[in-house]
Amino acid sequence: MFSREIIDDSWRYYRELLASENAVAAGICELSGYFFTKDGPEKVSNAHLARLCADYRPATERELRLCPGGWTNGVFCTTLLADDTYHLGWLTERFKEAGGTIIEAEVRDLRELAGYDIVANCSGLGAKRLLNDRRLVPLRGQVYKLRPIEDFWGIVKQEVYKGGWRAASEVQLKNRIQRVLRSIREEVPRTMMGRVPERVRRAERRGVNSSLH
Image 1 (spheres, rainbow, N blue to C red):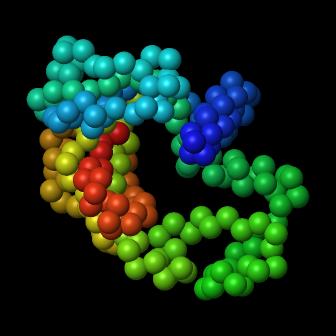
Image 2 (cartoon, helix red, strand yellow; image 1 turned 120 degrees about the horizontal axis):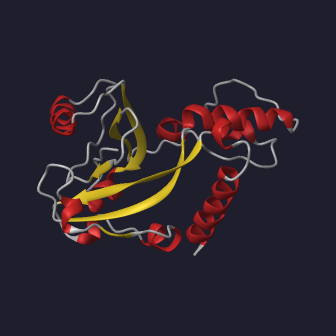
């Protein structure tokens, strides 16, 4: 219930920001597209998106053939995108305007922050060392930025790349993505590789994570 409250508050906040004059500077926009899978519909279903997105629906047979791959199930929806390339900088400026102060320093122990009233741990993968969390590993994500196109696809695969500390692209995944991009004839001006924190046991249980946006 608490997670639903956070999601609802976030959705309301970003919708209001999208409707404001700050939307462009804050990197907020709407994004419509598909999520496809060769597995059951549960692999692409999302109860929160279904509840919040007015146009959330299963993909039609014709839509499943839009992107090569032999997909058997999919969903379409229009959701919200916060581009961190712009959004984090915009938030930083709002924080400073409100009187906030930014101190750049390395925190080696949470006890160093004992004098603060509120502490939010946003250390990401740094929590592995900061909190001695031995089960924390990175999940790799390969991002390809395309020129504006009519549709975008999210390809959900039965793979999890655990423990990928290397910053280089994973060759097999990269080649597979490039084959799809060639088939839809889209230009790729930029590629990025990101890592998000995850605990090993949870990642193994979930068993699905690799995606193309």
